[in-house]
Image (cartoon, rainbow over all chains, first blue to last red; front, side, top):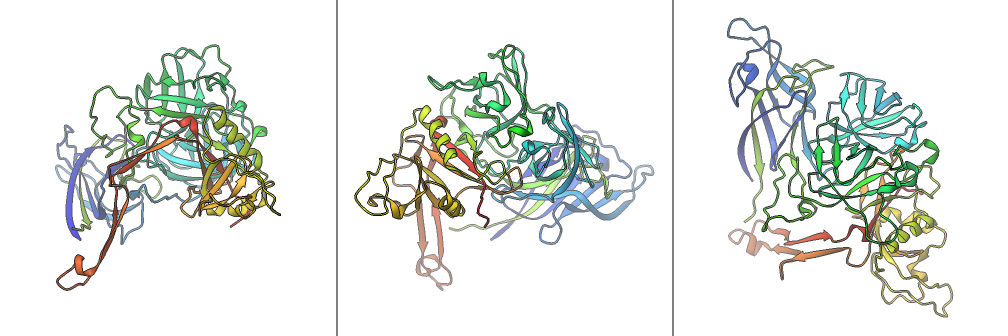
Length: 364
Length: 188
């Protein structure tokens, strides 16, 4: 057993949790907000700011997951700010290990508003962040949505959140929802790229497909489609005879809330429309996009592509590379320790510095 | 990645449903339409009481929790009822339609992923040459045990055990492998 201290830095995305990949066991983690402490770093001008968390610490053996011991600045006077000590009870630090399945607390869904995107209302504060991956279950009047993974694309900070699911054909329902991950980290599958359930498909040239969860595909990837008959648009399925039909990805927008893949070589204008099936069709298979070949790029932090021995290869690279991850997820909220809207990262884009005390076992 | 197929012909009201003979037929139809080749030859019928012939088959690899549901299925033939047991694998549980099921406690489960929040069991049905394995010569999985005399020769305080391997598996044709997803009817 040996101990080591790792250090690093990053610039956060506004209102978005940050995943820091660390393969070793994390015994303690410290985090400093340099920008809001007045320090200019990483091209971000320092700005000493009142009422902001500027230091956070986490010990996974002694503290609850999702929390942080914090120091928050009071009102700035001149070039100094007083420091208050306390705890950030929500959207603090969470250790992540992709080899271990975990899910958050089950929240009750009171209703949703059917539409081309879907706004869900929960009975209590759900605590979800934009970019979180959630799974719906037990939707009694809308069973066709049950079991689906969806990315949270917007929240009101308390009891509503939005996903790209097209529920135009659904009836509002009660049900349950729980968090299983975040768009920056793989959930349950060690290998990449994953199959993705389809949220919607345009009737246009070029054809644009939106996915319920950010797909992380790249330009040049080859995919096939599996669309059950209840969803329409059988045009995309491979025929029963002859070679299977493959589609080449020409553009990708992986931004949370967009989650689209464009196929420049496909004109879907005259296709049968795609629509999520009605409850009467339940149970059924899911409409899927299935990767067949891939380039050598991804958006997963800390997962470095294996080097290519030759150029211009269609290698389905990550299908043979274990993309399992360990690390720590830094939560996002309003940058304070508010019990309802708090979180370490806020809506501002800041420069951060971190330090992790880790241990690793080595046999020789 | 193998294309996933939800079982839909079971009766437990979930999505996917519990596994049924019709779901098995649908999965086999998909594979055969893609020209996937069966893994196992047919077992011909013989004049033995209580036995039945077994069709040419794909292997269905799943979790041991599925054993009770398989036992409940119409047309299920337990390995004890095969007309010839000369080519059985230790993990084999039985057959339905054109699938012979191999069960393991390490079989794949996706927790709480069904429409009703139940565990989803993944049954992988590979056809011939749907995946391959690449390994360095003589460097496939090795279990290495070092007794105290070797691991700590001075005081012989500890021993070590571990494994290493230099091999990788790869799906060669996704049309020739299917993931049949189901839930349980017989509660654990």
